[in-house]
Image 1 (tube, rainbow, N blue to C red):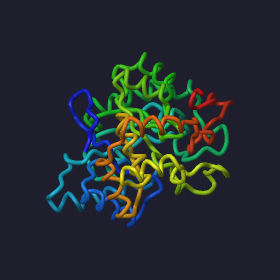
Image 2 (cartoon, one colour):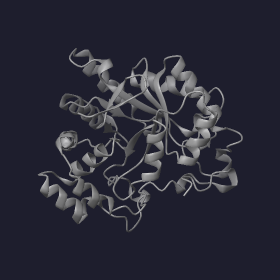
Image 3 (cartoon, helix red, strand yellow):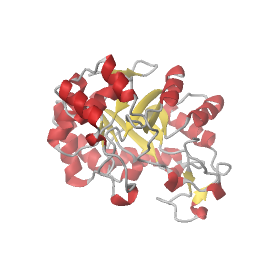
Image 4 (tube, rainbow, N blue to C red):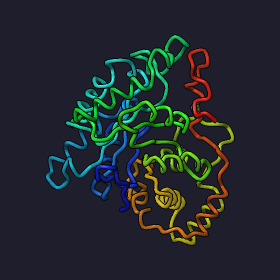
Length: 315
């Protein structure tokens, strides 16, 4: 399994298990299936509402004595309602409590948007805190404290553009170590990837398979299905693989981690064995031509110009 290496030498598998939209006993079984299959990288977030189930599964597996806490890289994320002064550490401690852990391997600011405390999803402008009321740098300073006090071994961000990263880096004491962003052949984000590489910021791809199991309300009527793209199907046939494996392998060939979500044992194993799929230079060139800057997760649901949140991705 390929790994990404942090500046202190810590490593993270480039293929992890995503858990957005998964919960309950189904998720507990998926976590166990993944760990038994060889996964050592699990991704979650406070807003997913599933940290308790993941914590139960981890505790049960660790109790068996064959896989240990230090073997598994676990990421969670700060929700948008806990950006203000004094809110980051309590939010992190709540995640740790639910996950039954003493520390996280990686903690991320989920979105560059702030809500009033207790707001899960904004319904009106007053649910937001403006960038002046909750400056990202002040949130980040609390993230730095979380790293310094051992709550999180590494800290980073998610859904940050190059512009937002540059501003944060210019003010931070500790540079973000990770940017988790939507990435796939239809949204290749070469410029952002190049910038992150130039700053030694690691990159994790979310929705690497297109997040086809999102609720209908979150989907565009005519959104593309990456499983049906002829170029990808042809490459999969040539490599004796399936399209999801080609997609995951593509991320790994670009030096990115990917966190495909599945709760089906067969798919969990197939995604993990994408590590064995080798793409040629010709394959990569064919996939490069698929880029169309298409987002499955548009971010429009968090844009509120009256509160200072406009053009979330700075495009």
